[in-house]
Image 1 (tube, rainbow, N blue to C red):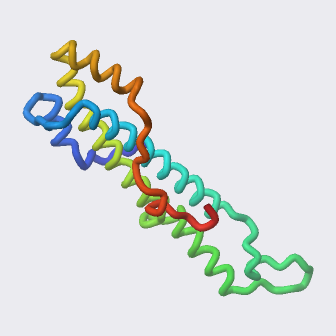
Image 2: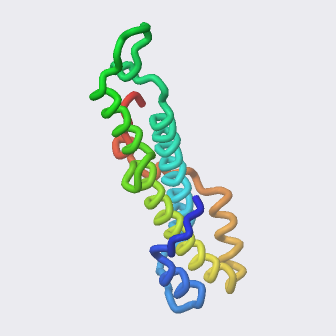
Image 3: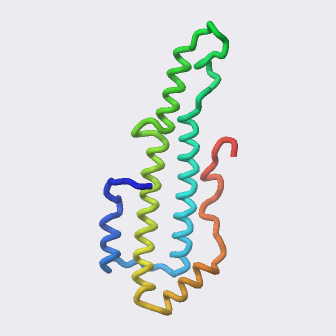
Length: 154
């Protein structure tokens, strides 16, 4: 998800890298935050794939393209289809673009928490070993209830 815009959390990430920001949190929480960020990023990518499919849908069956020779297209159907394509991925305020901005924020939160965790585990070898063990052995935790991410047909 490359984006040339400045990171929304750039200042906080810099503060964390330079040791001027501290977060009090158990190492277990760092593992879960990282996993949750990965989960949310994968959900966003799935939504974006769906929006791409919608924007590329060739036949909608709304009268936008009649199959028989001589039939005329419905102008309103073409207009609706174009609006759905634009809203899915064809405009600055499309679902795809909005999800892209959410992805960037989650990526920044993940970078922020990883930076803090790296500073903690980088100076304390016992904590580093403990974190590695937690990351490898902690059970998965559901990041959110499925109802939050309901999608028609799923």
